[in-house]
Image (cartoon, rainbow, N blue to C red; front, side, top):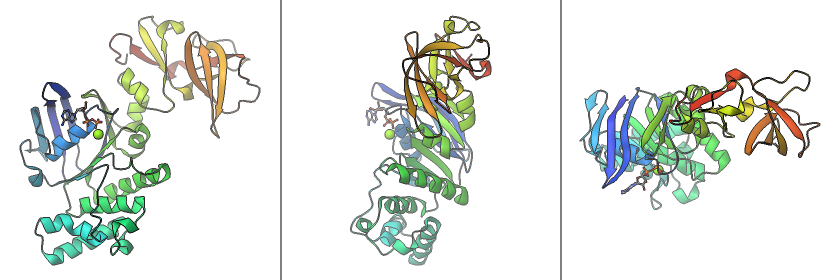
Length: 338
Ligand SMILES: Nc1ncnc2c1ncn2[C@@H]1O[C@H](COP(=O)(O)OP(=O)(O)O)[C@@H](O)[C@H]1O
Ligand SMILES: [Mg+2]
């Protein structure tokens, strides 16, 4: 088990600056997601922590000890990749034992550790099968088993679920979370899927173009996005953005954000408020308990929600209401939260 400190870490590939002064303090036993669009540097950061890549500047500490220049084998960290290749010619049992055999661990300990990992992951019945005889989810479990069998101080996972179908992905994320809690292991989990990050993490580190945007709990990131990028990246459907002049009460030089869930058809009986909007209802999209409304306000398409669309028809004018405390304000120039 280990705390991890990432202190002002930068990484260049030749002239390309991939990580720019990343600062993160990850507590022992915490599950932290690195979340951001493709190419923002998530994998690179993970490989730097694992020691597979040298950093250009800064420091990496495990439990307060400088590990910046330690070789991967001396870091006691396990890495699970997106395409977790199991050895096809080896039984599950031998796949699990492989990292221990390579470390010349004695036979008895290997047996004990393999059985322990299999039990933790509920794959005891699969030990004498070949990978080709497993489902996708079972293979994923074996891959995780192979990474924890050495009892690593931390587990780094690079988009480990992205090759699974949607149902299995949701189930596996719960399993990884349970495993992480049971083992009290520090897990760093890379994903580009904000919902996955929201559902699993103690805290989320949101990155864009090699720069850390915000590091906080899922709810804090959702409720108080630090800037416009985070506001647009977290939450589904995406937050609406409007110029400040759309509302009486907001200055022109700011951008106002409002989540679709906080924007609803106005109750026709009450007088219009300063934060009401009017537009053309373009589309109603029903997804079960909630209905999404696409409404063209001026030249901006907004997304609103309602629980009952009875009486609403595309083509009609519609008023939308939101509560002032649900509005997010961002500086039009810097994008920072006001
Ligand atoms: N070995 C490399 N040499 C040069 N550029 C690289 C190398 N690896 C990654 N990059 C670049 O670094 C950036 C970040 O990549 P990566 O960490 O893989 O992003 P992510 O995992 O967030 O999708 C990308 O622009 C990518 O093209
Ligand atoms: Mg990646």
